[in-house]
Length: 532
Image (cartoon, rainbow, N blue to C red; front, side, top):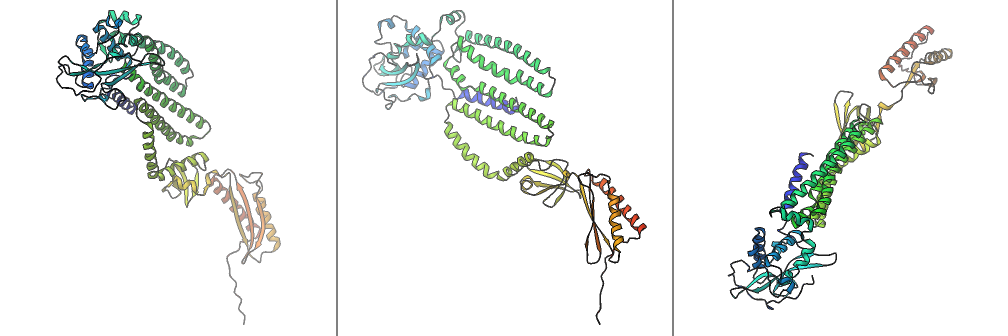
């Protein structure tokens, strides 16, 4: 992966983690509970900082994170619970609630009220505030609630409501440790990172290691047979199989298999839902496929003799990569919770501004596409266009460079080249010569006929002649000062200097035979008649 992709990868990882709240939200039909019945103004005198919903939850989470479940019980309302719930020790309920929060809920501390009165516009009674929601079945969930209760010193404080406490066993039966996980919980010490215990990380690592070894063996065998073709493309394809394809397969299989055996915590689930690593792997796969497609297309064009057209593959590759990068970023932002509509609106406005600023560049780029697809000329051919006569040296994405017959280089924008009439001298199959031979007016007719016969004989089955285009010689016309004989011949192939040498030979033979027959050439003359 390129250095730019690596930096982008690091940025996504940092952003994904730093944008995570402390826990997750995700819990209904709670049992009845008793409360104060009226909203009261709280006094800021509680030693355990239960004066506001946010403060109470924050210190509760700090206590359970430190495994101080005895202190944490002070943040739960154990009043008026059902008899079967009362039989469960308070610390055990608190510990189970911690596990539920880690695995199934996502609590956003910033969204909790920092006022002693809580929220008054949340469609809940004045003495309650919403904490989160835990899903326990396909169609049922439990709301996690906070409630104002009487404090030990006579003033009122915020606690996790007894209505929520009564639902802990039901929630734990769904999101708690199963029998398989409980074995490892009893063996390993309780220490968690991102909501996972040590044994969960070890199990996850072992699964990934086994998958890595299995995938490496399988893909190595596949790449071995691919390499046997011993071509440049096969080597690139083998590298793709062992590189981006293996990483993407490992990430997707690990994500599926690990979570089948180890229940993810809320933090890990949130990070997994962002799909940062998987999206980066997919992006690497797509970029590699684009490169493979470019290499393959270049080979096909080369076999067809269209090497110059391969220049189009570079901007096409870049444009595809940019488009795919934008799509991946949009998907990632959507997973992060960003409004994609707003982003797309911004991109649309920015795209219009960019198009207006780069319209000349776009015109030349479109001209390049037209030239390279239509192929009115290729590198090495002599062309005459817009008053420029020379050999094409380079066809770029913005302009065409022509080496003029004078030796100077002319750079013409491709927009102009695409719109101009181009005379491609390099593609002519032959060189045609048309020449007029003038005889004096006092040349007898018999000499004129002899001159035509001489020229025809000289050009009969001449060097470089195509049988489809034999030479033509005629006594064409009476000019003001001469009798004109016209001759045409076509020289194959269109080698200019060979043609010039042949033309010199023809001229010498005509002069020699005209001298032998006493036929002279007309000179430009003017006759003046004076009338007395």
